[in-house]
Image (cartoon, rainbow, N blue to C red; front, side, top):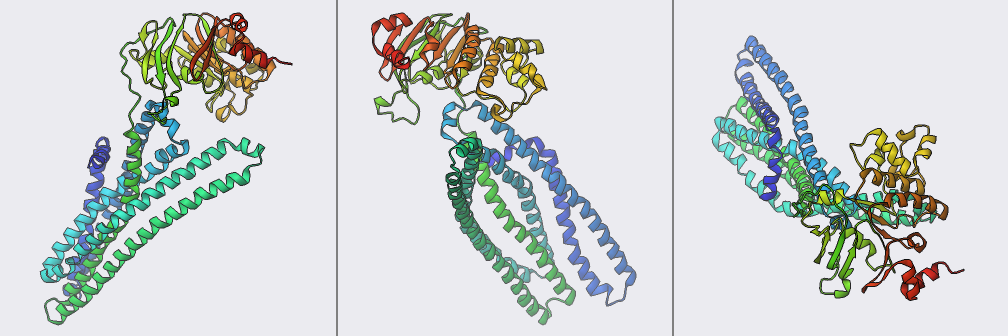
Length: 577
């Protein structure tokens, strides 16, 4: 019931258009009810009495009714679909806005292709249901009630015989509902899996080509495609049983009318015109029944899609308990007995903790480097500062204020991040740099590009800052993408900077150029650097060696080299001949 109320709520902004559609549907149903009565009068009165004028008058009346009905059908088909499209647009808007607020853990657990399937394919079926569902149900109800009233006016007992079959049709449809619902839901899940496979395969096309793994990708796709075909087959089997059963009831209804109506006519209970009108009304009666049959399939598809939409809408947003709106932060960071594990870790397993009881102080304006073996929690630690994930215990403070007391907007506004895997949006160089400050002027964008040492390269391009970078920046080299991301942070001008292996994917020559930009970027900011190349962090104010057991060493480069412990061993290993 909650799901139904949520679905109905999307009609409210478009209720005027919706009620206009319903009014037109009502008038169409009423128009259809006129034809059998006019046909009865023509057969019983005008033709036997050779009243040509009256026959032509009622023929003209019927023509006017049909023209009027054509106009109504246009409104239903056009504006009725517009209602569905607008509702679909509202749902898609709400879902996209909600996705922007979901925690990172949601995207860790859900495939991109699956999410896209829900926001595009599923909502398309919801749109069709939103338009046709109420309309078909309303018209069918009017037609069934109207047909019963008209049929009862001809012969009540004959009408009762016909309508006695209806409860059996409803019972059959209800018993088929559960099986169809399960089958259509499984189909949705497999469609999402196919979409996820396609999205991954296309995004990784260069990797699969370089490893000549096309047969493997084809095989993986075929397996997902086969599961979809099987699921769709089961859905159509359930639909086939439902449709064939309903068709049998339709045919049995016709047979009942012919036999019962024939007996009533034989015994003089009805005349020729009434018998003809009765047959015509049964045809009208079957139209709403057939509408309900198609509506049932649409209901399964649409409500399954809406249920999957609702599942995402029910996922809780990032909880923003903060109330402090700090315009700017100085950048003194403290970790106080901080522990963290990812949600899919075993809560009872203490070894599952990525960070355990970590205490650490980072002075304002200092550059602190995090080094150590993989799995020590370096990147995780960087993700905790902007609250991409919530800590299990302890607290993290900036300038003495718990980051949970700051609003997420205020916190993240003061943090700039440059990562190894740079993500550029499919747009121009200007748009990608301006992401650091969407209100920046052209000169501010150029100044940021100059500081990042990318301006001179941009000016060699035919379209300059209007050059399209391609999907994920595919038209640019790794170094060029990295410098655009650095320009983006320059434009943001944060007080805290996180460099997460920002140059580890670059060659030595490019790295040296990028390091100059990073040095400029780090000046005057609190800077946290995750690095595997130890040569890049020799000048850090402090180097912290993180392992699974926490902080193993900390100090300057010279101090750690003099200790002849973990850091010295890593450094000597990297620079051995």
